[in-house]
Amino acid sequence: MKKLLQSCTAIIAVASFATNAVAQEPLKELGKGEGALSIVAWAGYIERGETDKNYDWVTKFEADTGCKVTVKTAATSDEMVALMNEGGFDLVTASGDASLRLVAGKRVQPINTDLIPSWKTIDERLQNAPWHTVNGVHYGTPYVWGPNVLMYNTEAFKEAPTSWKVVFEEMTLADGKSNKGRVQAYDGPIYVADAALYLMKHKPELGIKDPYELNDDQYKAALDLLRVQRTLVGRYWHDAMIQIDDFKNEGVVASGSWPFQVNLMKAEGAKIASTFPEEGVTGWADTTMLHADSEHPNCAYMWMEHSLSPKVQGDVSAWFGTVPSVPAACKGNELLTDEGCTANGYDNFEKISFWKTPTSKCESQGECVPYHRWVSDYIGVIGGR
Image (tube, rainbow, N blue to C red):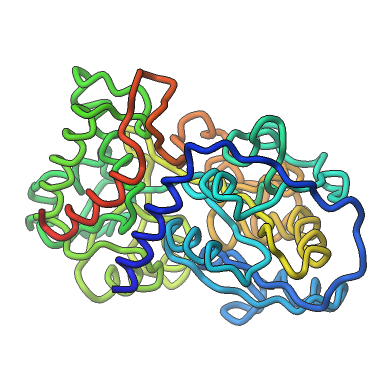
C-alpha cells in the first residue's frame, strides 16, 4: 500500500509538471548555521563512517559548522518526490527524473550560486544542465553522476555479456541454465526507458530517437518487451542492499544496477563484474536541491559548498562508483585513485542517456506519452497485466 500511495503521489506531482514554475527569490546572504540539516538521499550518498571508517564526509562537516546531519534514504525518484511533497526536509539528492518535477511542483527553491564559492569548479558539462536549470535559473548544485550498468555473475557468464538481451529475452546462459528467474529489473517507472533504449538498436523501424520521448506505438512496444521480461524476472529491485543479497544468496546472475552494488560485492570477493552493453546505458546526474520551505537554509548552503570539495567529491565517487561533478577530484584522491574517474565513466558522458521526466511535449517528435502513464502502466507490468 505504501508503494501504491507513493506512486499516486508521483502521478499528482507529474500532473503539475506542465505548469510554468515561477522562481521565488533565492537566499541573498549566508547567515549563521541553524544547528541541523535533514537530507533525503540515495543509499550510500551521505556516509559518516558507519559502514567503513574510511568513508566519512559528514563528521567533519558537523564539527566545522555545528549543523547536525540526519538522512532519510530513498530507494526511487518517486519516493524522493513524495517525501519532498510531505515536507520536513532541507535537501534532496534528486536525479533527473525527479528534479524538474520538484521545480514544477514548487517543492524546491532557486539557489544563489554566489553563496557557493566552489560553484566555479563544477564540470562545465553540468553547470547549466537542463535537469536543474530552468529559464536560466539554477535549482540545485550538481553532486555526482554515473551509469546504470549491467551487473553479472562471472560464474554464469564466462565472458562479459555484450547486450541487455540477457535480461529482456529468455536464453540459456554459459553455465548451461536458463536466465528465467535469475534476472532482475529496476522497480521504478523510469525503467521503461531501458526497454526503449534496447529497442532503439534492435527495432530501429520504431524510429525511437530518445528513450524518454516515446509516441504511442513506441511506448506500446516498450511495454510489450517489459511484459516478456516479467516472465523472466525473479524480483524487481529498488533496495540496493536487497539486490546484493539476491546476487549472493538467491541465485540472481544479471541485472541493471548501480556501481555501488558492484563495488561493495567486489570488495567482499564476490564473483561479480559489470559492463556497458552495446545498446548503451541509462544513467543519472544527481543534484542537491533545497526545499522551498527549508527550516535550515544556512546549513543547507554550507552543505552544498562542502559537497563540492574535491575530497568529498572523490570520496563519494570512490564509495558509490560515480563520477565527480568537480573534475579536480579526479586527481590525488587516495580512495578514488587517479584512474577512478576513467573507470567510472568520465569519458562516457555522451554515451549515457541520463534520466529525465517524460512529458507530453517533446523535442524529437510531436506528442509523447507523459510520465503519469509510465507510472500507472509500469505498476501494471509488475503486477502481471
